[in-house]
Image 1: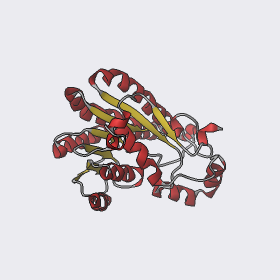
Image 2: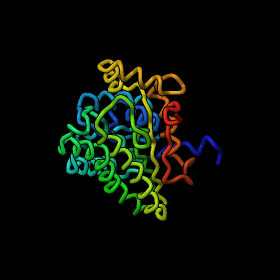
Image 3: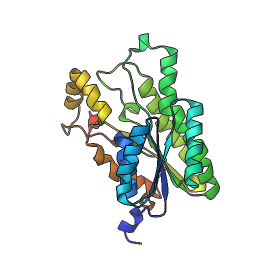
Length: 259
């Protein structure tokens, strides 16, 4: 088998949570370009339809699931609907997540703490449980969890550490699940992005220019990542090229975590 053919995803179906925009949409598009059919999930109907239209330009089948993955029941509903729509899912990217607020720990309510845990960590567990159970039965599958460099280091200039804690949990969950499911030929790995110029980060930086300055000065490469720069890594982890990799977290951050 030639090296290029190892990256061919033809005949596979990938499910990407939070796939209607940002890094999720980029990764879904990259997998489609590599040959995979796609299922994307999001709360926003308009974003879903726009993303599906864009991804279909690669000539793949694209299905959409509208739902809220920020609650345990919502995540389970979305995962089961995705399975129903696709019939079989070969690749799962647990991408949904985020840090919608910056509240100092001493002022952070238990409700907001739990909200970020459910959005960033519990959704990852539930989708892996529902989709991965079928992979275990087939003894074949790829799961890619989107963690963050924030699960490894603590971000300067942002407060409230529920996000860092949840993303550290994603990294630990990735290792645990990889160990449990390795005998079933299900690979579980994680990507830990640094600062990428997604729409939400551009909004953060426009509202908090001091944060943008801190972040830029902390990156050895001296720039933020462009969203499309994560696509190749997602294809690698979804493809046969990564068959001997499991339980790993790959950091892609312009060198932020080197300091």
